[in-house]
Amino acid sequence: MRRVIVDSALYRDGRRREGPGDLSRALAEARDARDAFLWVGLHEPSAAEFDHVASEFALHPLAVEDALKAHQRPKLEVYDDSLFMVLKPVLYEPESDRVSTGELMLFLGDSFVVTVRHGEGAPLAEVRKRLETQPEVLRHGPTAVLYAVSDAVVDHYLDVAGELQVDLEELEADVFAPGGTGTSHTAERIYTAKRQVLEFRRATGPLTGPMTRLTAGAVPFVDEDSQPFFRDVTDHLVRANEQVEGLDRLLSDVLSAHLAQMGVRQNDDMRKISAWAAMAAVPTMVAGIYGMNFEHMPELHWMWSYPTVIAVMAGIEVGLYRLFKRRDWL
Image 1 (cartoon, helix red, strand yellow):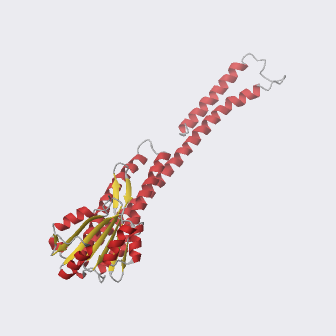
Image 2 (image 1 turned 120 degrees about the vertical axis):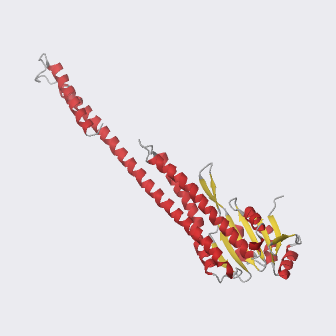
Image 3 (image 1 turned 90 degrees about the horizontal axis):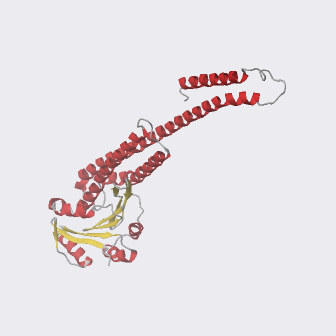
């Protein structure tokens, strides 16, 4: 049977405790203690599976609908009893040089945090393990989880941007390699890279607004003393967005250069074709003239007519070849 709740724990004074297995009792214990909170993590729950959790924590129906449907843009919404935030973790697949995105939703409320993960690109297990070794951070409650998860997601953006930068440098080297390896396949690779960057931008760009709100403070259910920490995350996000913008501009430049190369190459091919066609036209014209079979044509009965015509055609061909070669048409 598939595990929907991948982890559930009660944290008190920054340390993990063995709390009640029942969510309602665990939440009541956390609220009674005041220095405790409950963290429940779910992975791709169905509506029926999430219904119990949503009712226990009084989550807003609209936020629950977004968490179940996924395919949301990064955002931050505040409801009466909870805060709802959407993040889009990014995963780089080195085997295929592709970028894929998951979705991560966080519900923060009075003494609880619920995380809902869609896809494989969410580093929640590592974040939870790292936080459990830092009780001084966990003492800040659900805000600490929101910060740690946001920080892990945004830091991974920088790692993925670095991987894409390496791929782009290799693609750029292929396009500008001596001898020109650019083909229609190269254009396909560039467009594929553009799609990867666009997918990346959909994760990083819209997150700027929510992080700015958290940096400014005065967000319900978020500790006001956490502003410097979210400011640090925002700084990293700005760097990630700048790198994404730089990758997109560089890809556009590489594509323009590749298309220009292809245009020059096509012009070279047309010049060569035209040069060979011109050289072929000379003997064709001479042979056509002498093949008209008129009775009274000069030179028909002259003994040196044939070798003279052949020599003239050969001379013209050699002259044209040297002319076109000098002008780099051949």
